[in-house]
Image (cartoon, rainbow, N blue to C red; front, side, top):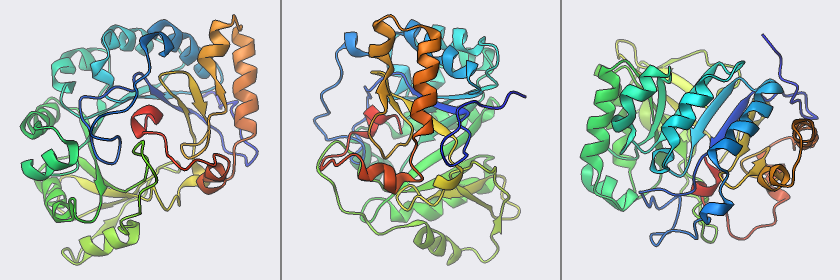
Amino acid sequence: MKESLLVDQHGRRLNYLRLSVTDRCNFRCYYCMPEEGINFAPRKELLSFEEMYQLSNVFVGLGVDKIRITGGEPFVRNGIIPFLYKLSELGGLKEIVVTSNGTLSAKHQSALKEMGIRKINISLDSLDAGRFHRITRRDSFDTVYNGILGLLNDGFEIKLNCVVAENKNIEDIIPFIELTRDHPLSVRFLEEMPFNGSELSGYSGWDYKRIYDHISEHYQDITRLISDDNSTSVNYKIPSFKGGFGIIPSFSRTFCGTCNRIRLSATGELRTCLYGPPAANLRDVLRSGATGEDLQQILLNAVAKREKDGFAAEALSHESVHTSMSVLGG
C-alpha cells in the first residue's frame, strides 16, 4: 500500500479527493443555494473531463486512493458516465464513490455497477413529500425514494445525508431511524452549515449532541460503532435493526484532527479545507502549460500549509457571504 505524499504541517496524510464535476443542480435546497439559483460558471470555465482525468492522475500519483464524485448534481453533466469508466481504470485508485440527490442515479445504475462503483451517498432531508418539496423546492420525492429502494435491491451500499434544522425537518429524525429497521442503509444527520451562497445565516442550534439526545429519548438501546479513523461521522446502531445511523458535526467540526480530504471544484479551485479559501486554481495552472511535476509541487506546497482545523481555515477567508455548497462540492 502506497502512503500518500500529501502530508500537512500537522502530520495528517491526505488520500481522499472530493472532485466536483459541476456546480449545476436540478434542486434548489435552501441550505445550498438561493431559490433563483446562483451565477453558474460558464462552460469554458469548467474543467473538461480530460482535464479532470489529468489532475486525478496527478493526485493518485501522490497517493490519493479514493475519489468522491460530487457536484452540484454530478449526473446533470453530460459525459459523466464515460468519464467515470475512464477514471475507474486509473491504476492506484482503490475506490470511487458518488454523492447525488438521487433523481438521476437510478438511470445510470447498471453502468455504475459495471464499473465497480457500489457506494452512493444520497442527499435526502425528509421522508415526507411536502417537507421534501419545501426544502428542495422541487417535487421529486417519489423519484428519489423509489430510486433508493431500487439501488438497495441491486446491492448498492447507500448512505442518506440529512441536514437537520429547526422548523424544517426535526419531525423526520425518528422516521429516518425507523427506516434503518428494515433497510440495510446508513442515515447520517448533519448539522446545518451556512453555505448557501447568500449572507451568513444563523445556526439553528441542532448540534450533534442535541440530535443524539433527541434520538436517545426514543430508543433506550443504542450501540456506538467503531468508526474508521478518518470518519467524519460518529456512528451508531439500534440492535436488531438492519441499518445504522451517524451524526456528522459539520458545524462543530470535531473531526478536523483526522481529516484526510482535499477538494477540487468544477472550476479548478483547490481547497485543502472546506471552510477555507482556495489554495490555488489548478485549471489555470494546467491551461498555462504546467507539467505533471509542476502540478505535484503545487499540491505538495498547498497541503503543507493546511491549517489545523476548519475554524483557523475559515478565519483566513474574511468572507461575509459563504460560497454556495453547490460550488464547493460539499
